[in-house]
Length: 121
Image (tube, rainbow, N blue to C red; front, side):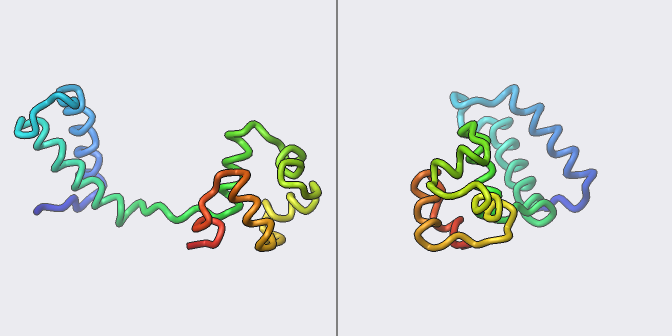
């Protein structure tokens, strides 16, 4: 199968995908020409993005910050939820201190964070 070989070709593929999305929905037959073209272009774009725009695994600190935002909590609020001091929470968020295993477990449970993220897996 062909590959996207340049940023210009990538941009064209994205524009074509955007165009085709107006003609393809969940009710479109799988053998429809527009649906087939859309599927192929999406595969090509995903392959290109995996090489040129890889998404790394989130760190525990980044995930905690995201959860704070989602839950509308500030540093004091998140520290209170976890039962730790504000300075300790600040040190964890800024990567100055690693949380203990029991605190990591609490973070995962109370903030609904996957243990794999907490363990850097």
